Image (cartoon, rainbow, N blue to C red):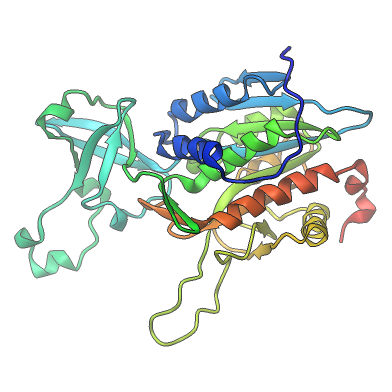
Length: 364
């Protein structure tokens, strides 16, 4: 058993070391089913901070950090290591490859995008006919993935093989109060969970699950939760911010989350209805600590909580996300304050957690 470092007082920030870690996480290529690059970073970062660390048969990284005192609540927090991307399925020669997408990728986002492929991050581009060669009718059609190809050039093509994963080539960039990057869904959650393990409150047993294949249907969360057998489940993720103005002269009144309004606490999504006791606990913590927060309005999409809450005899679960524009695209955009406040909320809430929250009479 490892002898983890003793937590120091925690004041969430994005200083140089934190930004360096988040940059490494976001620039890694870890499309669904090949999460090795992010997994290696997680294992390296938490080597000195966990009581028990395990990589299970699915590839999930399962970290246990035990608290002190009696009757501690076992809290599982999940963040997925994978990102949307694609898999090479056929080598057509001359550096041209057929591919299929992994996760919810809009084909309209693909044409002409620079990408990276495989463990060596081979540069390539997703190609289609130049506009000069298309007919007026063709220009009205959205190209299907089956009509597109990855072009790695004659040199790069020799280093790519069928089964290799790829993703967008966008690099992590700080833009004033914002961050632009690929894979913020869910490298933000991975980053936040790493920080929570390093600074885990001692009143709980923290069960940290860095999961695989979430983008393909929450596949890693179920075996992770089964193995941990938690009493509470929380998914840390990033969620779409539908906060752009309408451009037809009408105000956008259909916000599900907004950038700058703080962490988003889920009421419900496609896979989960948030446990009311946990929602109340998070909201009361945010109000007591004067942390800005918002409800993530019901809609499509889901998180690892969708599988955690159905494990064994059931696990009270909830999700908390950082709002983000342009998810599952070559570049997402977040506000740095939303990221920091999400981490503040989670640490503060865990620090004040006790078993009374699980009292059925506390349901609202």
